Length: 164
Length: 81
Image 1 (tube, chains in turn purple, green):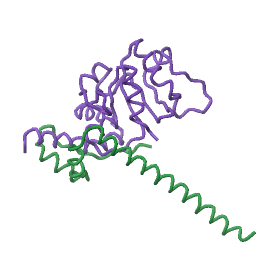
Image 2 (cartoon, chains in turn brown, green):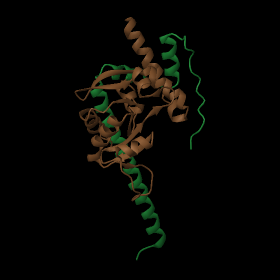
Image 3 (cartoon, rainbow over the protein chains, first blue to last red):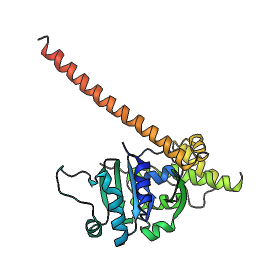
Image 4 (cartoon, rainbow over the protein chains, first blue to last red):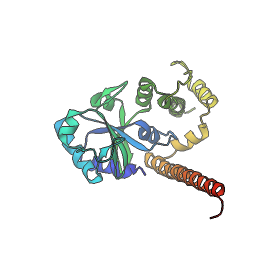
């Protein structure tokens, strides 16, 4: 089963530059969604490639949905050569995205993120506005299905801010 | 396979009350969301862990149940050995 805490703490302790996006970000923002994977948007830089591979190595990352035994090593060269990776690990599935549709690269995504205390650590998490923009841009039924709840959370937050 | 979703979004200038009415009509449980908003992010994730574990347990039970039913059906067809 997905161990969000273990994966996030490992990324944080390794000082990976990343933003939590997707279903886990939606949950942090209050959604009742259930997800079986952790999605992050990471900074494309050599130092960060090294930190990502160091953070995930203990969890034996491998490509998801490919025949078992297919050679794969998540190292800086592999991350540099690719962009988005759908991985399975001993702690559950994790997707590493170099770019997020509707928002762009890490810097653009981080501009739509807020710092939140999660599991005792400060982490960058995509805002409701960012999630809505990304889900609308992705346009798949499974993304669009989340919009009513995300828009409702936005409205509840607005009312709370107004004190109404 | 993904199916098209007929989702009519409220206009960008809709008031929060209009958005909430639209979301509720779409099946969103507003009282659950209000409860989630009272929790900390970590509490929300802990709640999710429980829900995911339950969902996976149901799914496994369903698979085991289907296998059991299939085995019973085969045994009934073959008859006593």
